[in-house]
Length: 258
Image (tube, rainbow, N blue to C red; front, top):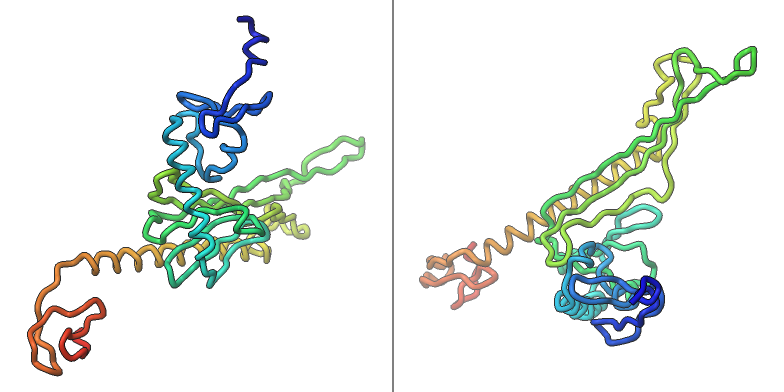
């Protein structure tokens, strides 16, 4: 079989059994995947080529079940920039990260706070020197040099999830720019914190980090408390010796024992 025969050879999706169109194949470790099936995978999943057919089928089962979790999700708080946002269900201790407007169609992964292992904000600076024309029409540097700077705020949530370990997104939809201010030498490289947008996105990143970090700790503390061995205590109301119930109350009189 020649090179062109292989290119135009009909391929079948190992997941759904459908025929894969030209240039529509998404290779797996031991099979092929059509772009429709690949499009149903988590947007944060990046190991498709090294995944087996069975592993992809398992993830698609998880993604199908995730639709029900999205439907049950009760958003109590939204944090984010103009594009990607974090939707938080504080009562269920869960969150979603997506830029989609229609959550049902996008099916964003619903993630428990307890799965968060850390957060990181990376502010990327791109510096471009400004120049002027001299008497001979040549572009030359100012003395001292002047710079226009642009900033992008990239955020990463690290998670202990079966199908991905990082959620990466950008807080700003367009770069935040700062320019030299006047002729004062100290301001030729502008201080970005004089820029309102810069401070806004920096604070947004810090807020997200603080919220998710605290929520993760609260969720883990609750799990640890639930799994801790129970010891008998004397009820201060009825005097009975008993193990407090899930609400920390006496099983006989209902009085609070905590």
